[in-house]
Image (cartoon, rainbow, N blue to C red; front, side, top):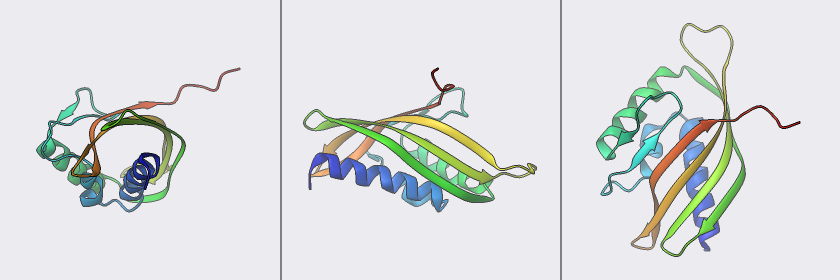
Length: 135
């Protein structure tokens, strides 16, 4: 399997974790022995390390009542040997407590991964909102 295919599979695991609200799957793509930095849109400060990521995933999936869709697109991967980074867009639609309308997030992500023991794991994540379409 090529690096492109392996990183695409890692991104699909990320997508599936959110679609299924599965904290264990979401946590599985990160290197538990590395002080991963994880910057989601909704937090003012980044999360650092495996324990913080695990707690975040456990808590955030419990806040979402249902997922209507979780899609990724525009995947771009750069292979730098034992390091690779990926950029992709995502669209999340789900139900949140106290909201009558679906919660919609159109975002973009960058994930930095490294290869350890012939397997790719995430070590850095940055998420941001998509800006308005260019004219």
